[in-house]
Image (cartoon, rainbow, N blue to C red; front, side):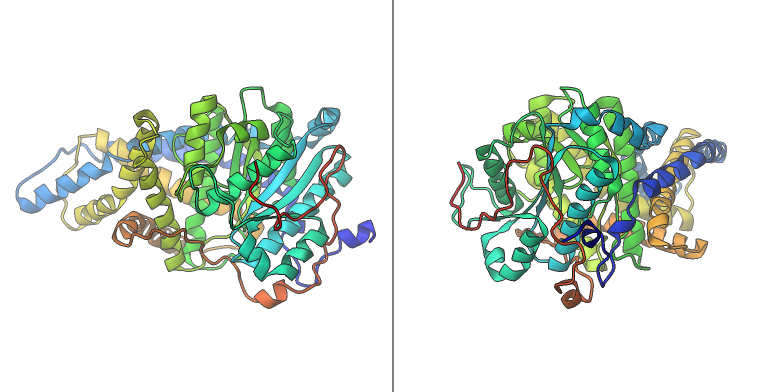
Length: 519
């Protein structure tokens, strides 16, 4: 197969060939140009709300009392919004741009570096999984070819033995393309009896250790089933590796959600997560850790650090949250901001949106119930859960106040808080939406944007209460495959056999479905 064959678009077409470094840098530059205007709008809104709220609390009847009791919820999320705003200011800088020339100039320093791109999946969304693997094989190969960079890379697909047995032709096709399929044996058990995703992650960690892929020059880039990558992702990984000091063992970046983009509110609501990632980049640069918000994908972890922390936590649904806690316990302030986007999918339905949020909130409660996590580490999780739960009564207070005005809450000061909160909310939607616009081609009108923003706010405010009222003990993976699935699984992938390993690679592509418990 020729090099031209490896780069030929498939019959279906793909999003990922257009995920270039130029598009990434243009997107970040566009936000940098608007930063001064956004800061001006923050100052103007806060000043206006402060001047308009000179009146103090008024309690003339029982309705006034109810209104002002509800208003107390407005104070709960203030620390969160302050941290988000500080992170936004420190995160959106020219430092987010990827300087390809500087990476090329230090190309010799990448010799001996190996990155294991690891897609951990239950295998329930095979069409999406195929796109993710293709994007990873394509761009790791293209970055080496286009920029002459000598680093080793492998693409691992970690799934369950049962899923491998049910779809042998599909996984054989991935192997033929150049991926390494790791089928976690059904008989494999961890010392603490881990379940769900943590079991597969620990098996992969054991396998890397047995193969000697656990040194300080080895890195593991974690992907979910739908975590498509681009040229900017790979170059961002390399930039991070080149600039990480010995104390920085993990990097986290910004995830966009352009795949399967539609017109529903769930698409716009996911863009606020991208804004939160942008803010988290600033927080990581400031403090070496992020108080709120944890990724299980688009994270790069030094292999020796991951081996030291491990994934064996018993039965847990929020493995990313628990891993971040364990990582900080072991290595302190060790997380840095990583350049480059990853490209995922939003939930397609309201029900899936709520189910996804339910898994997050119930996972947080599981961590809070663990005796092996100290109170100091639980404090941000407790605050985050309480803050999220306060969103619905805060929204109720806002509506109630509009219907039944009852004065201010704290003279002047509550106006300043209100200005900050509402600016932060709408800024997160606006910035998140604009980050996506160059990838989706979407142009929402103001009416549509405001409608979806308000519906999204209401849905996310409802989500934690939905979780409490509809508890489930399972690990839910929502559908991320879009029609036509059959077409997505045909043999005409268009990106087959991309060579992996590169300079210094030692492990040939193999499957591990016939291996016993590792270690």
